[in-house]
Image (cartoon, rainbow, N blue to C red):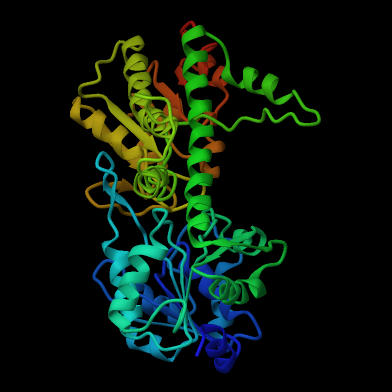
Length: 478
């Protein structure tokens, strides 16, 4: 019996499992559960000490994600009340489902050797394989090294189940394309790249995702093409950010305002002209952009070994972009040190208020936050660091104060790392009073404050890309 015949016999997709209750899995499960033609969605979450609490919260219709996620809380309550969604740690329930998706993180422990850490993903795949039944659909949503779906994932599923992909079950890759803070909107409105290991698998996976899409549409392709699409689009965004960061560093060195230059470049518009630039900043964080370049690099090393035509001896443009973005917290440290020197304050013993531990504005997402290497550098040089974030209450090894006033009190320097809306309303006189310093330093890593307003109050200002203000005259108050 062919896979196509097996799927016809099984009928339309009615029951779905989502493995991994995180920033991708939770909104995906809620949206799938809200589709009328789907009967039920089961969320699978390990009952571990660090994340097991999510199970009870989700079964109460509560989101464990903090930060601003429009519509998610209401949607979860709706699907739980309607008994169309539940969460469990019992992976044996996979056996009764029509389709299973995996949304599990795939980090790199050591980026130098280009070896991804697929341990969590492989554990999830094994759970699926042990409970796989003929006619089921398995979809990897995790960002993965090109070649993984038709390679490691296929081999592991076949080994654990005794079934054959493309004959007994459908297998595809449909990478997520979401941003924290707009999860539901992104899933509904972004086009969905769906790549099966064969045409039948691609068609079955498209059946799963089409009902969720509002504006977006399914773009069918091969599994490997879908893997490259996801890693490349994030790699290219990282490259664009690096271009903005490098230009910001150039503007600082030349004593000009990056934002004037950006506005000028962006003004060139017309048919076939694309000059829009992204924004520079204190660093790039998150789970995706910090690693997807390395997935792409490993993919071409494995799949394109011996066939890649590239300038001999030249480093990868994409990896260089990664290094530039990883450098930005170090640049923030140097701006901090320079500002304190202008204030006549040694770095050792200085108190620095670090505003923003999440890597993204109005979010609680702390994965690979650029604030951490900045804090580590300060502590290594003897500074005292007080961290505040309105959305992050705790983080391993870091004390986060609950009130911004506590962080600012007695601060010699204030570093803005996240563009949270709460920080946009900070007033220079209030910060000056809380610091109690004659010339407190402010280091703006997200272009949030008006430099002149702070300079007038006696602050020493340092900002990424603000070469026109970083060497300003210090205003003395009587």
